[in-house]
Amino acid sequence: MYDLISVGTISIDLYFKGKNFTFKDNRFTLAVGGKYVADHFDFKIGGGGANVAIGVANHGFQSAVIGKIGNNPFKKVILDYLKTRHVATNLIDEEDNYSNLSTILLTKKGERTIIHYATPHQHLFSSNNPLFGLTKTKIIYLGNLPDVSLTQRIKFLKFIGKHRITRILNLGVSDCRRPKHQLKEILEQTDILIVNGYEFSDIVKASHKDIHFHEDVISWYIPNLFEKIVVVTEGEKGSFAYFKGKVFYQPALKPAQIIDTTGAGDAYTAGFISGFLKSQNIEIAMKKGATYASHILAKIGAN
Image (cartoon, rainbow, N blue to C red; front, top):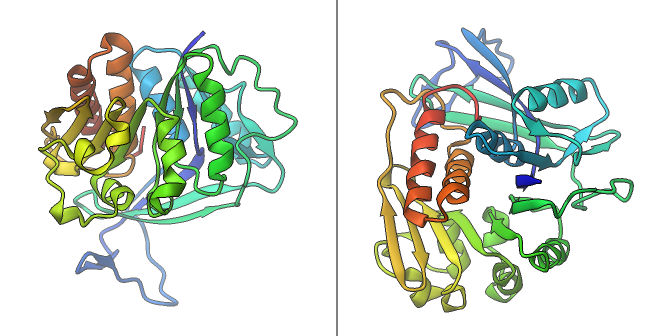
């Protein structure tokens, strides 16, 4: 029995940090034909599915990840890493000619630019993956998978809902910008929605600056989610949660020094899930989310 099964991406993350990486006006400026020497390099495993599963495991819970990895030299590295972090790997899909990699350039302040490549994949699970034990969990987290059709994701969430498993959903920018009628069913097939403020503004089709998150924005913008838990993260401004007309607020917790902002959202989600698993209390879960996000900000790597 798992506490969490996290469904999402698994990636190889290559971090480079160097004094001669010119950074000006919030941009790296690298010359065509130039060669740059990094002062610091890190090799990490990342991806939203892996990050959340590892984060929950770090809090002492039993977690597994469902994601796609390639039959390539990175396969053993990924599986070994996940096992050392106490994340079950038996539900992972393997596919020939599949890659998911990110090169991440870091500034001194922890800001980053990501160059990402992932082989497109259209299906949640391959036909040769039996997914034994899929329903033996307390929570399913479905991360951002924009290449997978809404129809498949809705079908999956409906199936999970029939087994009385708590369903937590994250949607990325491309999904949030869909018309409201396309999002209606997938939002109804979740128990907890976690998005950032800009994603929320895309969902409700309102300007971010016009949304007063301290107020009951759910009743105002998407009343059909009144009985769902909706969590909105706003970076250094903190996070907000809404449930049945109540509004909860958690200030952001800043580390002494921000080293890397990669994966802060996934870390908040992992902390929130861990707090919710232990307490079933929204405020406790939000504080745990903020605490774990602060921890991740103070180190290189998203988990």
